[in-house]
Image (tube, rainbow, N blue to C red):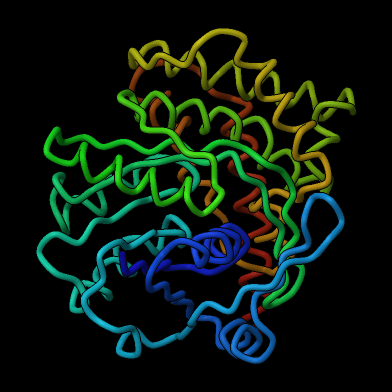
Length: 311
């Protein structure tokens, strides 16, 4: 299976390093020329959980024209706002059965991709892997976790199972999910509890569980999101807050993707995470004051950083 990972940051890079073990042809596509140069020069280095290091040498480029066609599977790992453009840019290298898998944080990516390729070629997923981009070409694996993959169209079930098998052969523990939208919301609730809180306070994930003030913010943000999920009929299971805190502890040294974005003065995925809860809350009449405040604070920082970059 020829695989293209679009977006080779922390998680995209980790997936690239792992999937290079199992895919017959794997390419990474990223717009960051520094990253492309670093990986071409020294490979993709992963600092593992046991303290060791592994090195992979996946093909990487910033030009889609350099990716051999046809591509069988596109794994979309770009930031939420870049989803439509990223998918549209690779279509010329795909065939009529090319699959598109999103493992992005937040919600709303599936419809954006399906608008371009249709439901039958769309796979949805979520992963509990943790990764931090230390510098271009060097990643710290911040925590192990399972990956769940599913689909909306019954015609795509066999394809989803094939991709699950690919992930397992690459050493990424993966499962097929018949209720993938519920799984995505379960991951969303974890992001709600961890990402904005850590980004605003510049703390690693583990402090959300161990520091009282951070934990209080996470608890209230998750409670609001739970109220929204219940109104939508999403089944997120029991002991949600316990799961959020368990993930925070399991990825304790990891710096959340939103924190990494702010540290690199990049736009975050706040609109697809806490901001999405606010929008749903407004439509459903569910109050979401903590998520609204977290969203506004992140946007203040984004605006300041963008203004500084323009000066």
